[in-house]
Length: 478
Ligand code: FAD
Ligand code: NAD
Image (cartoon, rainbow, N blue to C red; front, side):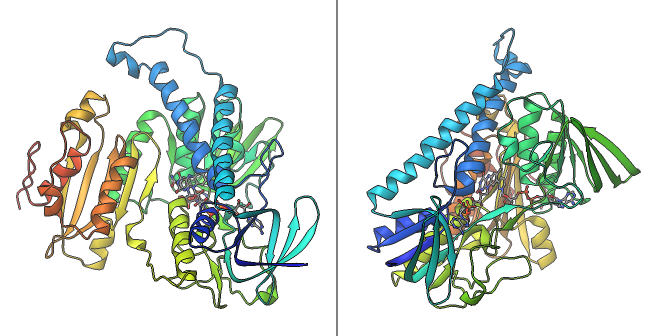
C-alpha cells in the first residue's frame, strides 16, 4: 500500500521537526519518519540536539557550574560558605534525562496538535518520489509525496587511531551518561564538544587533557577572543595541548594509553576514559537509494543550492546533512525556509547572521566576520572593544572577565561582526544578531539606550568605542 502526503520528512531533529510544524501550519498533510530510540526503549523526536546534543549537554553544564561555584569557593566572595559540598552525578544525569524526556515529549504533543503523522522507523528515499519505510516494529510500507525533505542529521566522526569501543573510548553521547567522573579524562579535539565536555567533567573532578591536532586554538573564532579563551580555560585547569597528533590509543584493562607527536616529539599519556570529538559527519550513508538521483559531495553531504534544493525537483535537504555550520538553529531556519518555499513563498536565509556559541565559562559567542577574515579580505574596518571588568553588572555578578568587540565597516559604519567572551555571552549575542540582520551601523547601537546596570551595556560601550567615544574606558587614539 502506498500512502500519499503533501510532504514527507526523513529525520525529526531540529531541522526536520521544525520543518514539519511549519509545513502543517501552511496547510500541508505532513509525515515525519524518525527512528530514534531513547535508552529506556521509548521512541523520541528531537534528533541529536534534544536527545544527545544541545539540551543534555547544557543541562549537565548548568549542574556542574552550580557545583563548582560552591565547591571551589567562588561563592565565598559573596560571603556564602558551605561545608561538605558533594555531587551525586547519577542524580544529575537523572535530571538531564527528565529534561530530555519532557522536551522530546513536548514535540510529540506539538505533532499531535498540528496533525503531523510520525512514522517510527527508518526511511529511505527511492526513485520517483517514493520513500521506503521500515517501522521499528518490523513492518514495511511505501510512502509517496511530491515534496520530500531529507533531514537525517549527522553522526560522530571516527578516528582510525582511536576507534570507539563504547566503554573506554567513546563519542560525546556516551560521555553525557557517565555516572562517575573519570579521574583522568583524555579528549581528542579542542573544538566545541571538546571544550564543553572538558569543562563539564573538569568541574566534576576529572583531570582533563585535550589533544588538538592544529597549532591554532579555535581558528573559526576571532583570534583575540580565542587567545583570551585559551588563557581562561587553561587557568581553570583544562590542559589543552595544541599541535598534538594522535598516533595510537591502546586500551589495557581500565586505562587507555595514548601515543601522540607534538612540539616535544613523541609523547604518551594514560587516561581512564577518552572522548573522541573530532567533528561530525553527515548521516547520509543509508537513507538515500542510489537510483534516487541525489548527489553527495566528497564529505558525504547532500548537495543543495542556496534554497536547500537538491538536483531533483521537489527533493530538499537541510541541517547537518548539507553544507554550512552544524548548528541546531541553522537546521531549524532551513526547515522553515524550505516549508515556505514548498508553499510558494520566497524566503531567504541569511547565512551571514548565524550566531556561534561555546558554552564554556566564560561563554564565547560571535556572529559575522572575524578581524582576521576582514584583514585577509582587505576590508577597511574599525573596531571597538570593551572589557567586562568595567561593567557594573558583571562586577556585581563576580563575573567581570572577558570583553565585547564590535567590528564595523570603515566607510559605511555597518556592523560586520560582534565577538564576545564573558558572562551570558550566549544571550548577549542575540542583540548583535538583530543588529546585523537589520543592517544596523555601530552608531545605531551607540545611540540606543541600554538599561543600567546590565551586561548589555558592554555591547553599547564597544559600539561607542568603534568611534573612540567609549565612556568607561580609555579610547584608543585614532
Ligand atoms: P539531527 O538532530 O542529527 O537529527 C536527525 C534525525 O534524523 C535523528 O533523530 C535521526 O535519528 C534521524 N534519522 C536519520 N536518518 C534517518 C532515517 N533514514 N530514517 C529515520 N530517521 C532518520 N548545536 C547548537 O546549535 N547548539 C548547541 O548547543 C549544540 N550542542 C551540541 C552538543 C553536542 C554534544 C552535539 C553532538 C551536538 C550539538 N549541537 C549543538 C549540534 C546540533 O545537535 C545539530 O546541529 C543539530 O541537531 C542538527 O539538526 P538536524 O535536524 O540536521 O539533525
Ligand atoms: P569541531 O569541528 O568543533 O572540533 C573538532 C576539533 O577536532 C577541531 O579543532 C579539529 O582541529 C580537531 N581534530 C580533528 N581531527 C583531529 C585529530 N586527529 N587529532 C586531534 N584533533 C583533531 O567538532 P566537534 O567539537 O566534534 O563538534 C561537532 C559539531 O557539533 C560542530 O560542528 C559543532 O558546531 C556542533 N556542536 C555545537 C555546539 C554549540 O553550538 N555550542 C556544541 C557542541 C557541538
